[in-house]
Length: 304
Picture 1: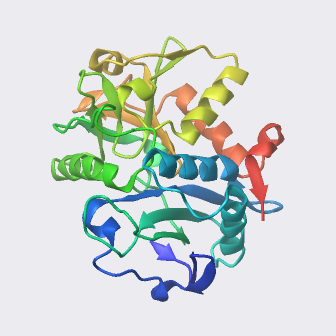
Picture 2: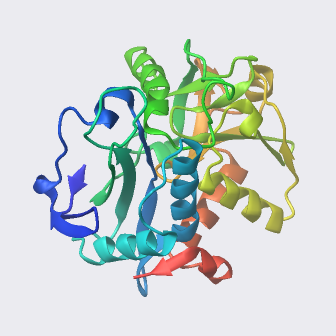
Picture 3: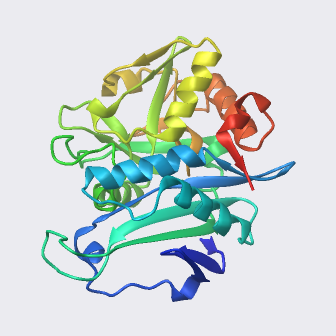
């Protein structure tokens, strides 16, 4: 990643290299943090952050699900994101707010551990790899299952959750695939290591919900809204592996992944093995929106 020179840390703007924590901080030992991924894009009228308020609200809600009361209001965090973006050297930026338990005790119960908050920005290219947006990706069903909604709240974007994702994507890469797809404990499709999944069959769109142990993605919600506005029928239901294998098209979506076509699963082609027409259409509309070229959804943009 190509980071910027400054970072927002506990209410102050400091040098990137000065943003440090103690090695005995609670978060390092137990993954006790929550975070967000937000994108800022260059538009014809300046920089625009996509759905900033929604991301900040989810950060606060994620903290609450883990009993973590983030010591800043949503307005303060919104202004902090805008401030650090305005100071960044990159026009297109990935914004990473994180709230985490710091140094006080090493008991599993964080007790009086301080809650630290940082917001960094950096340039991040195609998440799954160069050419993924244009050519699509080759995926595999992971041998690792997605954790149960009865174990941890999948709707929270918790730091520790992503050990599950890390296992899946490392395994996929070792076996020559671009990305993993995780099944849940009921053997329905959950999501990618860091993305929601949509499939398309007969011109209609299918995706799952929190009952499948997914993060309720903000990009996911955006695409559901866009598709509804286009009068495309949306089905929200459990998705089986057969549903995916028999799809005409499929794609991942997420802040970092944007709209990434899925071309195969375990070397079995989805459709004709190329990015599908409706996927490409939704990808084009989405990119127009985030870059300010589709005025219908300008309320999703926070201009800097």
